[in-house]
Image 1 (spheres, one colour):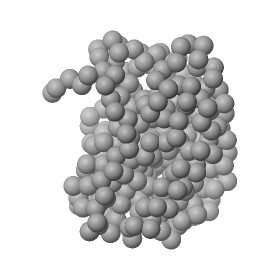
Image 2 (cartoon, rainbow, N blue to C red; image 1 turned 60 degrees about the vertical axis):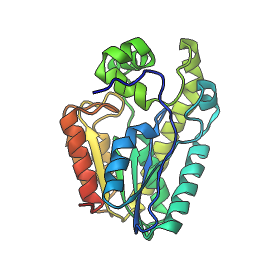
Image 3 (cartoon, rainbow, N blue to C red; image 1 turned 30 degrees about the horizontal axis):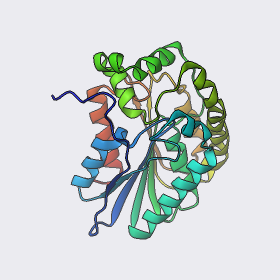
Image 4 (cartoon, rainbow, N blue to C red; image 1 turned 90 degrees about the vertical axis):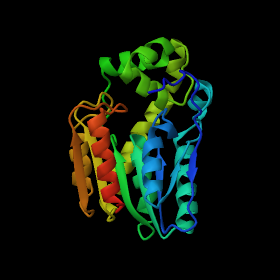
Amino acid sequence: METEKIGAFQHREILLPRRDAEAAVLFIHGFLGSPLQFEDLCQAVYQRGYAAYALLLPGHGGSSAQFARTRLDAWEAYTDAQVEKICRCYKNVYLVGHSIGGLLALEAAATRQEQVAGVVAIAPPMRIKLSPRGAVNGLKSASQKDAAQNAIAMAYHRSNSVTPPSLPGYLAYLPRVMDIERLIAKSKKILPAITIPTLVIHSKNDEAVRFKSGAIIDRRLSQSHTRRVTLNDSWHAYYVASERERMQREILRFIGAK
């Protein structure tokens, strides 16, 4: 396999429209995330006749200072506008979000339950976990040398669209971390009103989201037909090959793709 050049990733939205398609899948990344996380999934759904789009949220794809200045309401407004736009173009729309992208997907779907056919939430946080393993891996992923030598660090490096700040610069992220808590609180209120089908995927080995988040979402999605899938060996943004393949199969089955 050809080695990708570290630091050369282009974090751009993935746009794969299909004029003849009745269905589209919209992918939403999470905190510091990137559309590149969904590149293989976009291709998989597109090859099966669906339109595929992966968003780049405001404040992402650029500097850490730009990210630190971008508030939750900007993420919500952009997601909502893009969901509305795609719902005007396709009969059936599925939303797939990773981490807080899953919460943004559920929030956007809550007001469009006649238009959104289903939501997939991958590693959605109901409770955040701050672990030494996550901190160490975060630092490694910021290093091109470590990312080149470590498959896990490489996965995080590739899925991080924000230029890493200096160590003191991480303090500027604190308001955005508080935004995560605000989004979690809003989601807890919204979830009981959601009636559309949902697929929730969690990893036991997730270093950033507490595993009990899955059970919390199950309880609150009491009006929805919910399926929960548990992965045993994957992390928050790193998936071992067999479990990534399983996740893809589960998502394709959920959206009805053959």
